[in-house]
Structures are given as C-alpha cells and as structure tokens.
Length: 351
Image: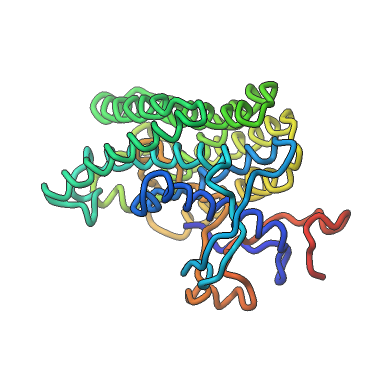
C-alpha cells in the first residue's frame, strides 16, 4: 500500500473526495449487483479509473443513487454511481477478469502465493472462484460491448512469458510488461466508445499502455523481499533490470501518460488529471523511496494485475490510520493536487 492521500492540506477538497468515493463505492456495489456479495472482494482501486474516465468524457454526469450505510463509510449513506452507469459496469467487468487472472496465477505459483487458499482443496476453491469471476466479468463486459476475452488472453500470455523468462531468459523487461500494457490500453480505449467519443480512443489506448507499464513496474518494485524469500518470479530480477533503470522507465512512462491525456477531450478532467497525473507521480516516488529503506526491493508482478493504487484506499473512521485524518469522512485520499484552489472554486476547498 502507498501512503494516506489527503486533498488540499488539512481540510481536504470535499467535492473531489466525494467524486472519488462515488466511483469507488459504485464499483463495489456494481460488483455485488452483477455477481453477488463475494464479488466485492474483486474491488480494484485501479480499475475504478475506468469509471472515472468514462464519466469525464460524458456530456452529462453518470447516473447516481444513494447507497445505504456501510461499515467502510462509518455506517453512513453516500451518493454513488448507479450500477446502470456504463463506466461502473465496465470497471466491474475488468475487475472480475483481472481478479480471476490473479487467482489463476496464484494457483500456478503454488501454496506460498495462495496464502489462505493453500492446500489442495483450497487451490481447487480458488480455481472455481476464478472461473466464476471470469464468467461474471465476461457477462458484464458483454453488456457494455467489451470482450473480456482480451484480458484473459493477456493473462495467459503473461504467464507464458514469465515461464519462458524463468527457464531461458533473454527477454527485456518491457517485453514482460507488454501484456499488462495491452490489457489496460484496451479497457481505457473502450471508455471512449461508451462515452460516444471515438476520437479519444487512440490517445486513451496510449495512456493505458503507459499506466499499465507503471503499474506493472511498481508492482515488481514493491514485492522484492517477498519474492526473494520464496523464490517467486519477478520481472526485474528475471531481466536483470536495476533500480535506476526501473525508475527511469517509470518516470518516462509517467511523462508519456500526461502527454497522452492532453490529447483526450474531456467534459471535466479534474479528477482524471489528479489520479493519473499527480497521484501516479507520487506513487512512483513513494515506491522507490520505500525501496531505499528495506533490503531487497523487487516485487512480484502476478499476471499483470494492477496494484499501483494510484488513488489511495478507503479507511473506515474507526481505523487507527484515520487518527491523522481527524474530522474526515474516512476517505484516505491525500496529496491530491489542489492547485485549482488558487484559480477557481471547482474544489470547494476550505481555507
């Protein structure tokens, strides 16, 4: 996990925080409505960006509803994206497809990777859950015109590349990140289709490739000690990619991501620029800063699963980590760029 994210200093940016929460909770509840309660485990903090991208391109706000009290919101109601929102459904489909891929990858890696799923019976349970999630993702994806088979194919390709790299070597690190890049590019580009802005598709695909590269590399950076301890595959170790080169690749990709997003026509780009601009750069900085403070720094990639957590994570009010967020509503957004507060009132920022 990366650190707590707080917008606009001590008081935060209420409208920005509420918008982020609406997408996060909307994704979680769309997973529940589309695949059952257990599917909420597949809530992915990166795939909510798909929901954000879709709404940012629409000519009007995506449909919303009032959700009932939730423990992660301090048992309070909140306005969230409705499951009818095409962006929320696409994000849910991608979350299930990638979650299924992660489970399949862990089954392939064996007991050490599965944790609570270790043991023959539990491996079978994980495999069955992966199959259900894959089918559910395909169904949700079909409802918004997106073929999740593209994602399943990239997971298979990722596993094949990792096996070959582990056995024979010779690949460059960007060959190993390519499946992740392609999967994210496909999902990002489809948001333009859902929003009725096909002219944005090419630039969004490029942005997705850069975001996927960063996510894959940061995942590798973060899991180094764990991978080294259990002899798990790591793309950086397998390709002999050092810390300095990995940082250069992340910085270059972050710049490319910013440039690609400039070519996209958004109705409202504030949250997009915050999450895919400011927060991505900060995530890179945190990952490599943390790597300096621990022995070993290479982390497991999984099957191209995104774990950059560019927009932080939700914290219940009763969580001890919320002690530094007194008076807040549990949203752990921090560090969000609110330079807008100096030029307009779009954030409703407190002084």
